[in-house]
Image (cartoon, rainbow, N blue to C red):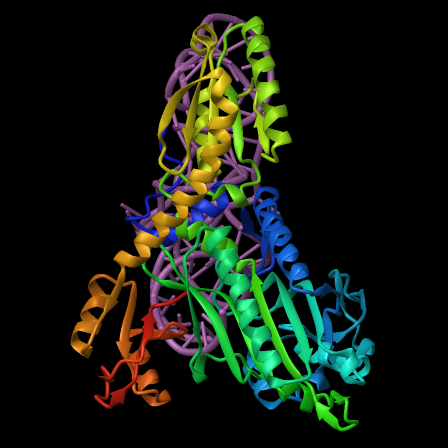
Length: 491
RNA sequence: CGGGGUGUAGCACAGUCCGGUUAGUGUACCUGGUUUGGGACCAGGGGGCCGCAGGUUCGAAUCCUGCCACCCCGACCA
């Protein structure tokens, strides 16, 4: 039988769409731009949530929940914030339906118009800062370190499963601090948490940086981000962390009394990652046979497939499989023994490869005779025959090795597709022929940034945190520049 | 929201130009048998308001009008 999904090289975009659907991660919903996250896809998201949630708790944050609906008036309190989100808000105007008098189903009851319209949150700064006004009185109430797991809605023109959907799931952290320094330290700390998660759990190497003014979050003083590279060379922003200064404190009148009894506005941060990470995970590692999941995020880390003819054979294989399952589970490894009779082994191999299960153990009659099992790894597709007694230890180590290998493969890819460029012609040429990340000098003006993005479709992804001081000339204007910034075409 | 494309069985598509048998193929599904170390094979079977609503016609998947949905390309965005 033929392959389940198209090749990356033929049509990257189609490959992605098909993979998401065929691997059972998500599908389109009856509502335009929204998606149904299917059990397998949601299981991966839950793993991400578990790990991140732990990291947030370890850094002192608590979870809370704020409402989905935000009074329209809240939005207008922070000028930049409204401007940033006004164009993509869903608005609730009525609260009741009634039967159509002409018998054509239900209609909105015009009698039931809301006094004040409600905005479905595109992000929760406003409603949260409105609460903070009441929660914060004195320096003793600070810092306030809150996170929420929620859905948000941004009415997007063009959507793609996981990468950009009208409704998406995310976490948003919102903190308040006594000093600017403390808030800035929080902003950077959370950026580090995201980078750590991306690299060490998702196997996704990132560039940490600061957004230019034009790419900054609406209402922030400074936006930090992690940028990652997908296999088509395009950049994907995997997480953001914002230093809000006193913007929201002033807009919502959130003040605290200092030790000295003076009244001051508090300093804020917000930071988030979303189900977009699913898109990053898929596009960074997967291949033409399907998903490739890093073991730390794989809902099933090891699958055991029996190969047999008779019930007696199956019974003996099952005995071995059950002992492996028990032993591996006691080490915290998630194992599935697939003894379904409805599918053949070959079918199962292909299916688990499509789903990105990191390790497969096949046990057949020959193995039972020789005292061996066949162990296959998803990332390299290598197979090895291992003595039955060594299998558990081997698999346990292999999971680590796969996690490492997936990361270093992505890291190498990123290195190979990162270029340093010193003139505009070369810049355009590299973008056209190779793509990837380009480090180049920029004069620091929004005009130049806009021109470059207009002419080449590449944007400044960030000013890298590890930027080296280096005298140079802006590739576009020729004006002096003190360091290189990261350009790329982006998702 | 502008340009282009596509809507036919769960999925992928043919048939539409040029109207005329009972709307077809692959796959998936059900039954029986043989199979089982990389998506098995044979036989039989079920499944369609041909996107929706009008219109033209003796007759519409096919022609006309309107609407809707999805995909691709642009403008906007995590």
